[in-house]
Image (cartoon, rainbow, N blue to C red; front, side, top):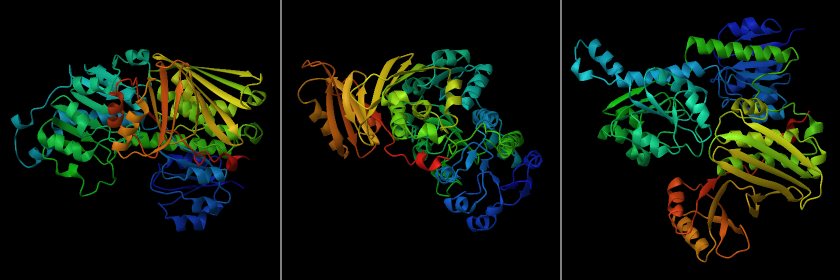
Length: 544
């Protein structure tokens, strides 16, 4: 008897052609939770786009379900933890819309530069206003690209071909990669703000990039700048952008994504008086992109139902229990070591060296390697998971070295990560200091005992009286509560270098970090975020 596959959300019919090779295929319109729960128990696979929301209740009712496929990039509409707990593979199509999104970015840039939407409306009203809609050429202008992922790389390559000078800000790529595209890598965003005639965004929305385009950064931009955002809503402060356009400081903006979608009627951008182009999240909406994602995901579902592996799985239901069991308590620690070392490092990664010591060295540490790399990559890339981490790390092109030592050490098991970038070298070590009590025990040359906390401030400083009080005062003045504080000396020499580590209850914003950096004797100040729990990986429940 053939397995059954349910397809919803108006997916291209080619998906049914592919799946019919191995399964009985049923197409339906978008279904609500209760409707889906009534029928899902008879299906072995489910394929959706973004409209159908896959909840824990649906997955609980899916007694035969082996795989859920999302015909697109994101999987926000699928409860990954519930799927993992049920042993259901979730797959997507991470590259299906790359060309479409890059082309839409270029289209929006040219539309606002040449006033195409307003000119179109004018001529349809029977007017002929050539002088009113005089535009500007992009040739010989400077484009600032924030981020250089797959889509950003295509946009940069196209812009260079159109004769633009391109500046790239991405602290996680190497200079060689940028130069291969004919662009210039800059070290800080101020260089983008000051020099760019056009700015385009190609970064995920994270704690670091939320409201990256705000009143302060807009004020630093060149007068007359034109801004494009086809990345994620919430990266641009929409109220601040409206004010900048209305004042004339920003000449034009083009946006395909918004903080709230569909766009709220009260969205300030709807009342902008100046030049603004807006589209309803059309970046991936091409016939070719929809065809690509349908084919990609249908092929993966077909392969899984045929006993093969999926190439773009986003969860880990089949991680082997015999490998995971001896090291599972270290997995979250390993991921946070990677996350921490990436945040204290700058530049493109050249080499990563992972060393395990003590009892850990007697086990197969392949799961720990994946956890470390996931932490490193997930700081600046979207959709990184335990399945695609090895593939992504290979694509990034850096070297990964593993070593073990069963020689006794201070801790039962110790993991050390040494990262070499084109800007320097940083090392972080972690261990269990008691049963199921993970700690970061060393950061570069500074010994510590840091808990896995969500909000962390690290400030290297001169070892002299008053430093703790001055930093604490700034945090207090900004209503940031301190949970824990420790200081570690680089050497037992008063007046040398120390590092202050503070965990807080709140995010520490860039403006506060800048204030701390201005203190005499402070060498640097970095905000670090870690993941203090294991809910995101659900390891214990995913073993089969």
